[in-house]
Length: 179
Image (cartoon, rainbow, N blue to C red; front, top):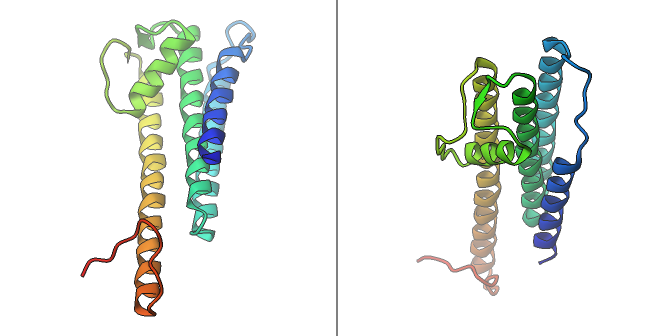
């Protein structure tokens, strides 16, 4: 329960930062500055994701904490891309159709995460499409890592159950052996 509350708190704080972050920038910053900031942000997200995956691999028995860490990465990824979309649209209104507010940008980032693509908000400019593609790849990696964490925990518990069953010990709660 503590991990659920921690995750909900992390989500709430991430959303709070997203909506309150001051985004006043100098008029017409050079495109190279925006591109460099995006690349640096993606590099940071890659590092953060790899860090969480490595942390999990070192401590298989602490899956709940690892899932919480990967969920936190997912929250940060979504907010990063929502901010990217919002700033891109603010600086070049031809990048997206139907995106004009932070809520629109967050909505688009979440819909892209779910690969639903309702079509009401969509990228029309090349930079917007590139950013959306990068998010899709990132989302697949993070979601894949979440599935890997969950499946390795299941395998770990089944292995423990088999080992304990072979030694005549009681099986852990919620684990059954198939004959």
